[in-house]
Image 1: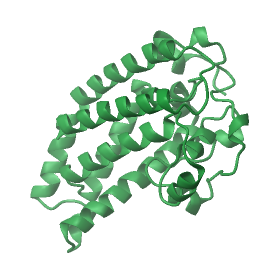
Image 2 (image 1 turned 120 degrees about the horizontal axis):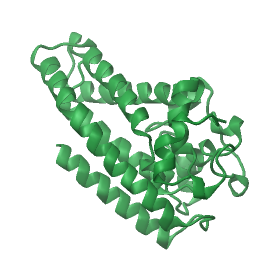
Image 3 (image 1 turned 90 degrees about the vertical axis):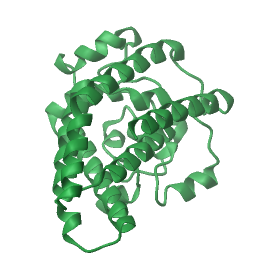
Image 4 (image 1 turned 90 degrees about the horizontal axis):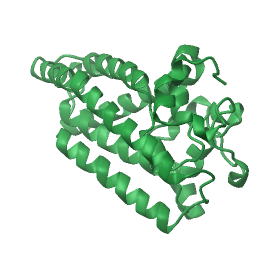
Length: 259
């Protein structure tokens, strides 16, 4: 299953890159090649470290939960498909809360700002995370998987869907406005997430959804209707492109500038 997840990851990355080159939303303000040369190696190294540390542990937790019927979801008699739906909703809601906390808690923001420091938004930004954030996220996921008894199949399906979702809503693709209005009813269109990457703090601290958009709508964190042409991508404390390379991202959480 992890091989299938990897295949979908690279297929999504390739597909959205082609679409960005064919139907670009806006021209790059900084070198796309240099950004990719920083973002992609970061993704590969992070993914390898995450896999080595967490995959076998997560797989064992899920196997134990399934064989011994542990966790909240296994406390109720329900068909497997309904357990899968509930598991995906639980995982996505936890990611919504975790994402919000990454903006609210100063320590978490130090790591999450690596993602937001990208000065352009495209599919490679979906892979631009600090390993510290990913390792903390892995601990949260383990607790959720164990507490709710989420199956291995459910978890891997969720991972595939989330990867494709974040690749899509980070991509710089010209999308039909009618499609986006329909898509935002349940999911995250690029225009919604583009607001979240705005340099304006009020706009950045909104639109935390990862797979589903209704969490933002329900909890009042949805920002919609912003003039997309006026959105400046990035964070105010990191506006020098030459200081946003691979090694700069690794050490960014340990520097003083944070806003």
